[in-house]
Length: 52
Length: 313
View 1 (cartoon, rainbow over the protein chains, first blue to last red):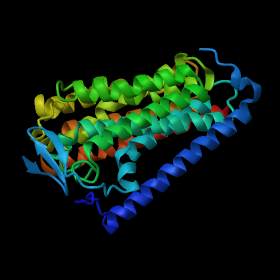
View 2: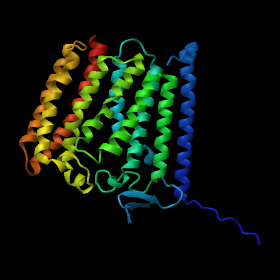
View 3: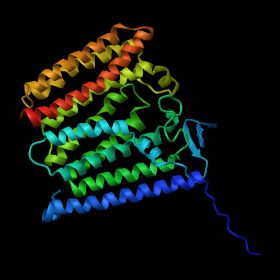
View 4: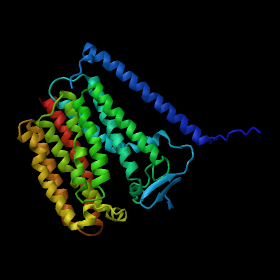
């Protein structure tokens, strides 16, 4: 007999907060990408110069 | 086992679990986990240090450094709240934090703090320089392990030694801007270091009952209010020459020096009021005033140092 696996059903509040967290993570990653892009442009070839 | 929030549970002294339900934590809860008010002070002191450091730093690199320092401070705050969730639940001032309220599970806060710390240190190292990144990593380690996990529950000198973590951001800022460390950032370190005890002890005088209930060995709990008032006055007196040291040693102009001396003397005056007014409402109000003025003191000193370096020069 087939038994359907039990799934968690999110409440409206849980769904809303998950969506807000997902958007925040996406924005943070976007900012990180932009940051690396701009700093690479700012540094130019010096970006490869990495003295410890 | 007792309930302390919407879902969190305490076993013994630790927050043991949060009901295994999908998270309802909002973005605001995660922002609160990063202690934004502490973060603002950290960013401000680091900003001044970056701005007064010699040489030129590209604004984008400076911004990146400050962003990483802010995120690193937030990571340290999150890890502090994860470790201290049990005592936070016992104190009125901290019981509204996301973990005691059951908004964020301890494990989520731990993961959040570790990820933020790794990103902050890694990005600072890759995009700015590795000395600044190493100092940031050390600061987070010192705040979380040395202060939070070790000293805070062990000794009344917790905030004296632990204050080093809050004093390092200007040094990180300087290292980010110059690639090295010199006397000036060490003076900024000393100012924040000697400012920390009177600032926090003024708060702990007001909240002594809460600290006692949480069994935290803050100075007023262990040594009494009288000794705390004495220590506050001593540190405030020592802070006067240290605050003026950038001017006395020739790193700042008279504008800064005179401001630092006046602000330092006012700090001593507030500390003296705390020493003299020992009972009832007057004592509480004197401690409140010192706490509030100490924040203004640090802000004014660093703001005038910035004006002195960028405008007067």
